[in-house]
Every structure is written in structure tokens, then in C-alpha cells.
Image (cartoon, rainbow over all chains, first blue to last red; front, top):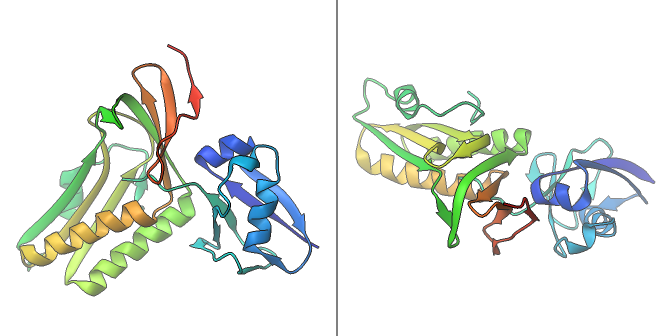
Amino acid sequence: MTAFRVELFARYAELLGAEEVALELPTPVTVSMVTDALRALPGGEVLPARPVLARNLRIAAPADTIEPGDLLALLPPLAGG
Amino acid sequence: MAALTTEPIDQTALGALVLRPGYGAVTSFVGHVRNHHGGRSVDRLCYSAYHQMAERECAAIAEEAMTRWEVVVAVRHRLGDLVVGDIAVAVAIGSAHRAEGFAACRFVIEEVKRRVPIWKHEHYADGTSAWVDPTAGVERSESEGP
């Protein structure tokens, strides 16, 4: 199993009621496993099927593998500018 | 220099940062908070960001522009609470001539909107508020009452 944390922002932080969640998933962990686990949390059911996850400050692909210590963040649709 | 700031943006000072003796042009884009969005009357808004990634993306966008054109780039994006008329974002491009200035300025503001993880929470005149989702129009996420 691999334990890690995911930062949440803006509307997604409101939906899940937290700015960070701790998860533990069977190794090897992929991005889509993380987003599926987030969607299974209370409030997570309204997340899109494939929400955007940043891994180490870059947008990650669903099949990317998560390594221990990676910086993970779930990003709502961007609205800067 | 940090792109994100909770302080008011000084567009004149930003322009001065990109001026060089060989440059004849400073091209700017300045985005202000407007009083309407999606047919609703906006009173104020609050910007938040994934700080580390937003700074990294702003720096990367500036680097890309400076690689593509012979320009110097400065970008600032405001965070926190803003009211109608406040500057939300500013881009300044220093260049020898106007053509590369306009091209780089357009590139930078479009990439900032597309790539930088910043979110906008709008508060409306009717007392409600919503997170702005450019992919789905305005979503009402909460109600504050009148």
C-alpha cells in the first residue's frame, strides 16, 4: 500500500469539505486510482469522471504512476485572468 | 519576481520593469473586475490559487514568450478579495518594436488564463455567490442570503 495526501482547492475543497485528504491505495498507484478514490469520498460523487490531478506541479495523465512523496493536487476548472 | 500578489497591482511600475534602453515599446494587457458576468450583477470576487504551481506556470509562460520573441515579460495576478474596477491581472511586454510586443502580450494573457491554477469566487448583488467555471458557465455553489 502507498499512503499519500492530495491538496484540494476552491469548489472541490468545498465539495469534499477539506483542503487536504489522506489516502492509502494498493501499490502501484495511478492517477486514475487517486481520482476514483476521491470520487468515492462523501461529496466526491459530483466530481467529473476524470477530474484534473496535478502531480509535482504538472497536469498528470490518468495512467501516470504516483510515487511516494509526490505532490498531488486536485484542480477544478481554471478561472484566472 | 513573484507573479501572485495580494497587494493592488501597479501597472505603471510593471511597465517600468520591462523597459530597456533598446526597447521602443511597452505593450500591456490589464484585466479589471467587471460588474457583470453571465447576465448577473457582480459586487465583488475572491481569487485563490495553487500557489506553487501558479508561480511555476507564470514563470514558464514568461520564459516561453521570451524564447519565442525578443521581449522581456512581466506578469502579475492578484489574489484575495477584489471589488469592481480593481486590477485582477496585468501583463507588460518590453520590446524593440510593437509587432512582437502585441504578439507576446496576447500569448501571455491567453496562456495565463488557460494554464495557471487560479480560481474565482464571484459574489453577486442578490447576495448569492458561485465559483466561476469557464467550462460550464456560472455554477451557483452556495447562497449567502440577502
